[in-house]
Image (cartoon, rainbow, N blue to C red; front, top):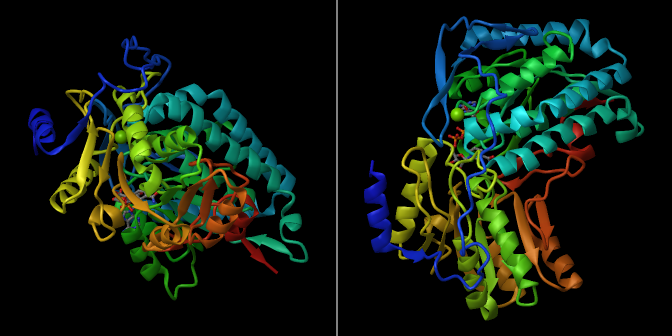
Amino acid sequence: MATVKEEQEAREHAVRRIEREKPALEFGSAWDYAPAPESRDHLRLEERYGLFIGGKFVAPKSKKYFETVNPATEETLAQVAEAGPADVDAAVTAAEEAYRKRWSRLKPADRGKYVYRIARLLQEKSRELAVLESMDGGKPIKESRDVDVPLAIAHFFYHAGWADKLEYAFPRHTVSPIGVCGQIIPWNFPLLMAAWKIAPAISCGNTVVLKPAETTPLTAMLLAEVCQEADLPPGVVNILPGAGETGAALVNHARVKKIAFTGSTDVGKIIQRATAGTGKRLTLELGGKAANIVFEDAPIDQAVEGIINGIYFNQGHVCCAGSRLLVQESIADTVLQKLSDRIATLRMGDPLDKNTDVGAINSKMQLDKIRELVACGVEEGAELHQSSCAIPPKGFWFPPSFFTNVAQSHRIAREEIFGPVLTVMTFRTPDEAIEKANNIPYGLSAGVWTDKGSKIFQITQKMRAGVVWANTFNKFDPTSPFGGYKESGFGREGGVHGLRAYVELG
Ligand code: NAI
Ligand code: MG
């Protein structure tokens, strides 16, 4: 692995550095911000976390533990139990019993009350959750505090409201739950993804076994504590940290009735093969390579903010990131100049600092993947522009970057980089924009920037993407369904559509 110094030297040679000294926008460059770290004093971290099965934290039958680290400092935060097949079996048994004896028999309104209680307890612990999320995963505190945690809570509130109104969601049907749901989530939005999975499942009367990602298990452990505090009947929510093998054991467990997975397309395909012919229900939310299309009549400054938010939010670890900028040729130079100026003002560093815009890359593995794809982009002839911001001496970091001179056949234009790296392409006509936007195996999201309402309708209708934003990007709401086309997966999460995955209709 290249040292930080080598990396910086290499960048200086191959890269067009975006300098902070001479941006046209003066606001961020005249002085440096004083550090404004969020306190971590109130955080209680256990040295070791067990598995959460049947309402209790238990030692793993596997006898295995793994470390979870802070990717910004490489400090070990805690040891976490790794669930093996026997643990998965114990959790499914606990979930099944809870389903049969308690949860599916409970009055729907009472089910809703438990879910409301979880939402309120999460609210009380917002600050602790935000700090822990940033420490375990590397995302800036302003995002975990203002986006991840409030949205996770909103999902519990929203779905609690549905618990006793499901017959209105599906008129002319009888609505019943499915049983035990196995849920596997990634590391980019750990608490939020747990909420997306658990809230609709239990509100509809199912019980769950959730597997958080191996680099970010800690907020899920705090959520388990919240379930205890909420007096949720034991076994309704079970949480099993572990890696791919734990996930596979859950997928292959015979008594799991439904699998919900968010993660890479490769693993999604494995899961689809594993569940084929078993009668298990499946929803997959996989990768993306969204087009963010900027027309010449767009409000350019707002569009630049949307581009920044689209790709540098959460270090680009976002399945629906606007990772392919399609900009109309006539305004390309202006947009790219403004984009460079804006990138020069982004502050990368300590995720717990309230002024930080770009945090740490989630893991060494992910950093290696980003570096490999970026190196491939340079080799294939694209031109790399990169922020000249300082790289902290420890931890995993990648500076905000974008590529120009990108051909559609380049790997960086087709594969999910899942980092703070934008590829920029141009177009001349709306038809060309549509063609280029859809010419990709993925179809999760897209963005359209134009001043003209009719053009918004014209373009959004033709996007083969589950979510299309107009004059905004990365806006999420529990009432709005989210999900993909093509290799981005199937099934929807959120809104009435999302409930469908967790009910049986008669
Ligand atoms: P991954 O798909 O391996 O991990 C996601 C989750 O699946 C984790 O909880 C993991 O433990 C679990 N898992 C892994 N193998 C499994 C298996 N065989 N059966 C069941 N569960 C399994 O993603 P990874 O390796 O962390 O990231 C690789 C790439 O995937 C990223 O660079 C990114 O491009 C993409 N990705 C996309 C995400 C999205 O939200 N669409 C989220 C995470 C990664
Ligand atoms: Mg971690």
